[in-house]
Image 1 (cartoon, one colour):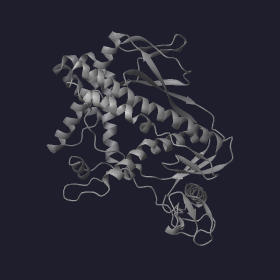
Image 2 (spheres, one colour; image 1 turned 90 degrees about the horizontal axis):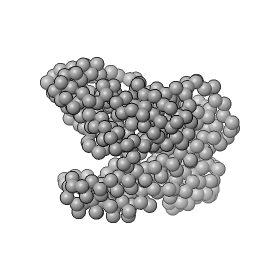
Image 3 (cartoon, rainbow, N blue to C red; image 1 turned 135 degrees about the vertical axis):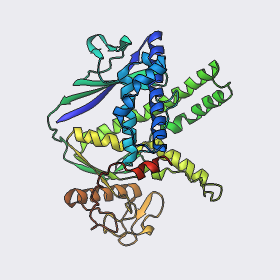
Image 4 (tube, rainbow, N blue to C red; image 1 turned 45 degrees about the vertical axis):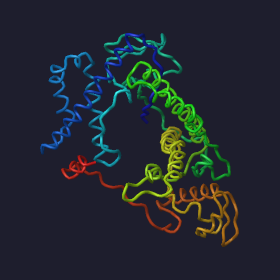
Length: 411
């Protein structure tokens, strides 16, 4: 089987290379924003949607109009236009929101699909128009390098190298199956009774982040001191993200190596963490409490946990099954009785029919595993009160229509 894998390293550029990379990232951001504005204006005029080829043909004209744009590598500008086309496709397929304009200082990056060279024995990388650059060689690169993405995160420049290689079809070493119930008090509770304590990375750094944000708010906007304070804020955000990512990688690696099948809830995190503020005419209720709950939910990283678990199980020959989350904490795993009264408290479960007792999260994980077995066996949805309901077939992919594009411009 073919495996795509990325290897990320920290770059060690000199001062001139850093300034050049910032100019390249700014040129790519300009090309993205100009293409997005052109696309919206083009649709407002009643014209058809412009694909990547049509936008790429406008690059030579933009370089003549803006001479500094020609200093950036052409392939990096072209890759940014491909990213825009992918963003439009994701929006039309309802996988992402409407494409937004890029802001300076956020997600500064550019990509080279070719022309780069990697000298791993000497821990250096050659990049077009940048020359040789040293990097922290923390592990060996496996496979053939297909492209390299340069990005700035928290004041550090990183190189992400995507590779491609052929590997044998994996056979799972483990033979067990487990159900996982994710939460806030317990990050992940297993159907065997064990659990993983939450990390709460943002909560641990929240006071430090607020301190630096207050200092930044007192500085004159865009002054040198303001930029210094901003870099400290960005550093804290990077520490929060890196700590959470490290925790998720360790947890998912352990689960994927020790289990052949993992069943989890098909949670819609975006819907669960929506604001309850409402508007002036219909103000929301318990806004402060819901805001705290949303912050706690997003601090766990449930979506990233599922994403990592899915591809790591695939690499190890395992399988991930997502089941409906309805009534998992109200269904008795012993007799199957479903009732709201079964959940006595936030953590205590006691069946009103047969008297079975256990922790609520453990009961939920046991029901998730049972539903996972049913989905794997016969494709049943298996959600509490409608166990015989078959799963709905995948929706047929439709091409973008004029009505869809009209909807996009009003988002």
